[in-house]
Length: 157
Image 1 (spheres, one colour):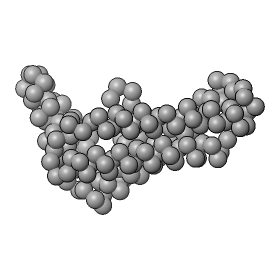
Image 2: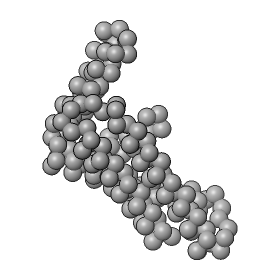
Image 3: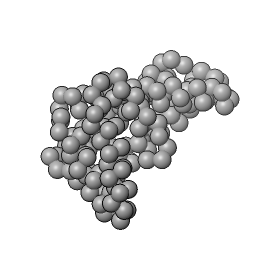
Image 4: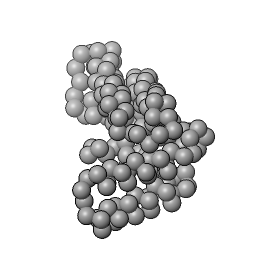
């Protein structure tokens, strides 16, 4: 099971990391992130499909054609954890060594999105304060790791 989890987890993680670098290459030095979000959706679908292939591979090669929910769930979670780890490492490398202005550009983008949403000025200011407190004042790598894992496992974004 370990080989299957590592194989498909690494493939899934590499798809996600390739998405990061492709998308950031297309965005360039601008803060026009919404135009390229379809790349993120397509790559997430490709990365998550590796969970299916991992479970199928385990069922066909190790479990003799039958798999129960318990083993399928374990394989899916473990593939996701391996992929998440690579995703977070990819972001850490990008943010620390390739583009240190990303957070500033993304903050500008987020503020434009909030202003265009039609929310009240007080609500926008409150959301921006929370956003800046989380993303701009977080400088420790351990906290960045936690935030990026949280982003990857969220179901609402």
